[in-house]
Amino acid sequence: MMTLHFHIEGGNFTNAGFASSQVKKTLKQLNIDSGLIKKIVIALYEGEVNIVAHALKGEIVVEISPETITMILTDEGKGIDNIELAMKEGFSTASQKVREMGFGAGMGLPNIKKNVDQLFIESTVGVGTKLTMIKQLDHA
Amino acid sequence: MPDHTSFHHALIVDHDQCIRCTHCVKVCPTEAIRIENGLVSIREDRCVDCGECVRACPQKAIDIDHDDLALIEHYKYRVVLFPAVFLGQFPERITEDQIYAALLKIGFTHAYEVEQPIGVLKNLIAQKVKQNRTGNPIISSFCPSVVRLIQIRYPSLCESLAPVKAPHDLVAHYVLEQLSAEGIQADEVGFFYITPCVAKITAVKTPVIEKKSIITGVISPRPIYNKIMAIADNIEPIDSMAMRRELTKEGIQWSLTNGETWWQRSKTMSVDGIHNTINFLERLENDQVNDVDFVELRACDRGCAAGVLLSQNRFLTVERLKRRARLYPNADNKLMVDGKPPFHHLESKLIANPVEPRQLFRFGNDLQKSMERMQRARNILCHLPGIDCAACGAPTCEALAEDMANGLAKMTDCVFISQLWQKEGKIAPLKAFDRMEKKWGIKRFDPDCHKKGAKNESN
Picture 1 (cartoon, helix red, strand yellow):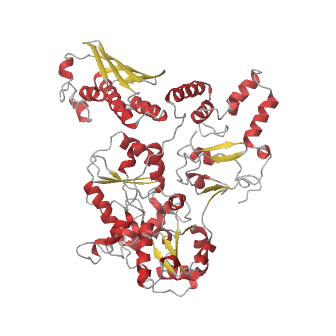
Picture 2 (cartoon, one colour):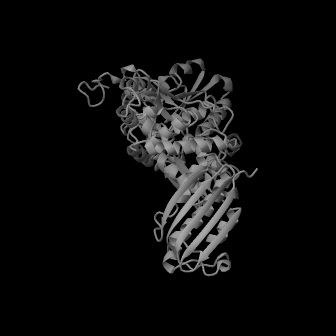
Picture 3 (tube, helix red, strand yellow):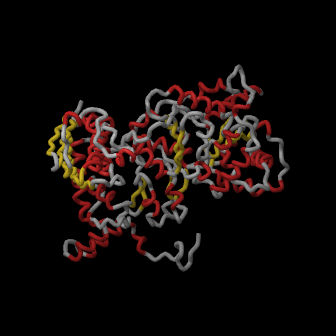
């Protein structure tokens, strides 16, 4: 088991994507199938941008074992009011400022769900959100 | 372990000239070079022939494995094929006709510029772009370093490479056709290509996109440049029109940055320089490049005008070629045959094989084991100084840690660790020195007053 840690700063779009590109680099060095890497990176990137766009700060922990990759994204922020609604394509609570930067199209959570095998969302309004994404590596 | 046999590399290190200064180790974009057992060594499975090491070497110790000019004597008809950037090496006072005359004087029977009749390639690329339904842009396969880089680092992008051969293949087929019209047999003809760079040599010797190249030999531009400069000023010009009849604006600028894009109607992008190319390929691989139909990537900044074997300033070369191109017609203005560009029948000869990935296994090919090794490398890295000094013979601390995890290097290869361990009594000073000497070679510790900047500097 290998663990990678990242601190994410809310509102810092300049750095958004650092965690996902580090994870990509690691998975490539391990010669994981490129199709799988792509899906993992897309999901993680979306999650990372979600923290930057919506939360004050967050943590990403990525655990890699030969069988699975588990990505746990925890943030401190406003939380998600209605998870079911947030899962709908096109639904977004992103501010105008965030949208002007090309984010906040309401595709984040649906896109994550599409690209991982399991997605768990826990959220408390006014406290924060925890996303757990799991992807099997021994796909065969 | 990866196999080390299937890549032909055109790089040769002259170990007598090499002072093991690690300039090449540090600039290699794929971290393919190490100092081992007193010698510089290139890990063939990682090398993409970009030539950055040749550029960086202060000793000119890295040479290329080109064919000897004497090889041409075996052929009755000796055709020299040279890229337009080669012509761009010469000062304005020497005319095109004088350069062609000099090439014939040197011993060739025919001289053709490589980038003709470029309309064929132009048409083929435009077709591939138009037919592309993959959702990803087509990537130019012109630069052999880029092709090799994609093979080893971006395997998923292999299928995006344009399956077309290079201008040197095109011109050889075109010339062969011209010569056979004169009654000349193919086996009497030798095609000799003056290469601007290392990668093109490898592309001819061990092609990725074709089974066997039509080119007979690859020649370095350096001796030819010297021979031409020695005679060109006083040589009687010849009428070279017949040998550059199919040269066009597009052809002359083809190998430069934007050469494959400026004439396209679709959405294109051009990126040059090996590091820029790597950054861009990362984005392409992540699907972060949208709304582009064709991507041109060149390992050298300013394209082949910066070919590592060329000697003149790249910006001046580009300027000369641009000025020259103004005097030539557009490929589209060439006489059409049945509504198609001239020589379009050569298209079938330019269809390339698909490019297969050549995955590099950095930590071995077993996932469980490679995870363990990677974890070990990460642990080791905690102890290394992180200054990437290359005094261990590896380009970075990270690369050294990776080598250690793979059993290819020792902790004491790091001079910081070695000092610390001596202080802590973990290794005897003499033993530590012995290890250094084994790594760098016995003479490495002798003073050398001939090195750049030293008392008796000489080249």
